[in-house]
Length: 356
Image: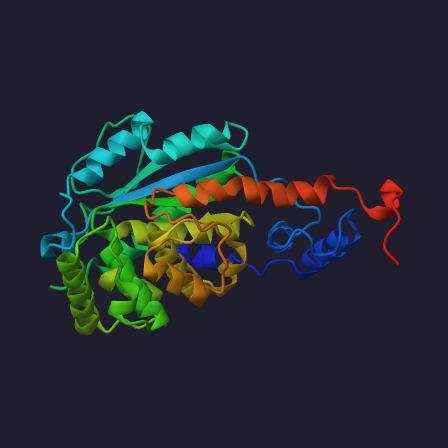
């Protein structure tokens, strides 16, 4: 049995009894019923994930930024040069990126670390201190000329994500936040979203780093070409990833599966992570119960992915950066939901009279 098959077999449904106990406790807490809105839904979700009420606090969290390059870059889908992927990996490792700043703002008790995982950066990164080397290939191939990767490479990348989740949970992480880095990866993300949701390339393809109208039209054309060439079958998630995905998308899908297998919440970020979550849930439908949508990206494909998954984002701040930034900003809300179930007194315990 492969690591993917073994992990999928360990993904079980969330605990319905714990969810029911959380809902009952929320109604007895010293507040009007339902007054915490979607925070109450989140608290119930966390209880179901943990299999107990109240659930443990989902901290510390760890952000894992998965990095890879894309052969479709050659089609002119972005004005950013490909070497920026490797340069940004260096920036993450030096602590100079936005996700590093956000992590520091939360403090070590809430976010222990930002780790960077090389699954497919084109430039060699050997010897970079602090880098997790799970390199599968030096980037993908151009998905309009052939498959982005072989099926074996797609599986290896998924397993790289699973191994990363296993390692972080073993080290004490109680909440996982996936992030992405890869110039041109929103083009692959759009193709994945189309493949799994049935959306059109025009609806799913966005401006990514802020491309102009001409480049956006080229992105739509490229996604259309790739889908026509491969006709990816959503019933074969590994095949979809191999045909039009990125190495980082495949690794993030594995990361989501790993979190679910360990009954640890995974707080999703933007469009690339959303596309990867579609693949993860296609591989193991019960993994959906362990996913929390951290925010809504302005990328149109992200809204399509969240709708297909049935997830409502906690935040909507107009972000479109990636890196795990939007997911990380939602971690305090996730923690507060669990804290409320732990700490808020019930009417009977506090001696507070309930309404008639």
